[in-house]
Image 1 (cartoon, rainbow, N blue to C red):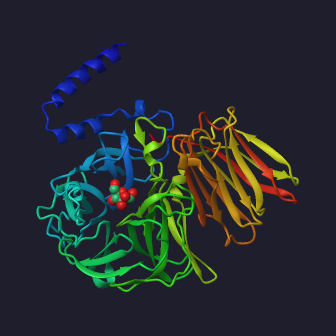
Image 2 (image 1 turned 90 degrees about the horizontal axis):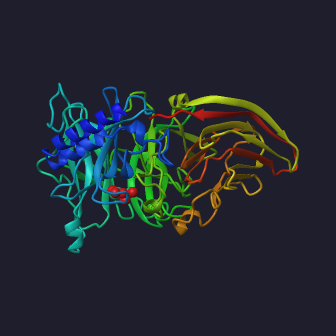
Image 3 (image 1 turned 45 degrees about the horizontal axis):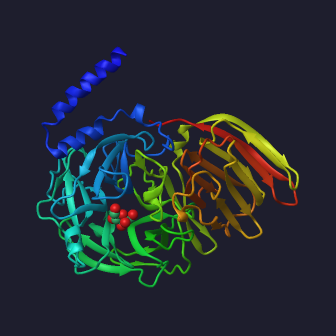
Length: 522
Ligand code: FRU
């Protein structure tokens, strides 16, 4: 009680002091001062995924590593739990597991809201915004001018930059923003910039409605148009958003290909928002791809607007996506904050026949979050099922190996809520059914149908299934991330049973089933 009185007294003092501050400063202090330990236990609050302390979040932005720190910026609206005037929220991590919430990095200004974008370390101070001894971090983002939009003009999205000379702690907008104007394209946004060694220049890729455009620069300030890609390629069921472009070696070989990631909304295979990719080549000017098939990084409904880290020190391609979908993002049943990021995933390129596939799988180090609860092997005769009980599947990792291709796994609880995963080898499909998984009625689109993923290229022999569940999400990785489904769920109490069911006519063998308890990162 004494502590409580002392705390209240300190709070009163603190808040009267903070009222002397400017509005921006005030917001910064409030966000930074929230005691996470008491806050982070709300219903559905993920325990090992990144979430903002409070309020609305969407896309990851400005993923960049510098001087021991991984930065995660994100689309943020600090005044409500629905989308609004966009800011860049900010968090940092030394290991991509534990995060520290930071004050808001970028606020809207006279040029508009701060939409999605990227960040680079300008090591050689090409921009002149820092010095060679203290090179700047430069953020490149889209300005969305709401007044211009209301006035009916089409050129309301432009690209601006901001820089930091203290490794992201504070940011200054470039005084002559925007650095890239708009010639009348309505959806002209989400610049991803990277340093291209062969041409010794900065390359910027952004989206322009139904295609991507590439630009180059020597100094991050003056940009020249290079080329476009995509009007005739891939899925076009909605607007293209949040591009990323990077080289990747094909696993087990020296062959290098370029990957173009494009988020699209709507038009994803299971409804609403989704992220497609193209494998091809980039010659410093143009990206080309002869890929015919539509390819999706994740077949679940809830992995959108994902991009990768710049300047990653271990030469890995690390991807983080927003675990939601514009079809119902504003309606999910949380109160204090909205939505989470995926776990950080390592991208790799695999070649199957003549086709390249982009796999994504949790970073190796992320495994330290999971602590073994028990292990067992299962052998089930045709048609048989077995229940594996655990008090808290809602914060868990499941892993096993099998050769079988016809089985069902369902999580359930005492309220008879169930989340059903089915591997159907005959139809070469993996299915995720959340229609009875808990709260679903908040928006019709949420549980309209069973989510389907084709698994045509699953190799013969044994493969791994790995499932991460974190209170309001499930991430399923099949064969080390060759096939992935990420989905939000809102059970009314924790799932306590995992039921394996053999739907084949032969024996089902589940090898080395691991049930692991996930620790909380907060
Ligand atoms: C993607 C997106 C981006 C845009 C941002 C606005 O989810 O629509 O294209 O920059 O969100 O918050």
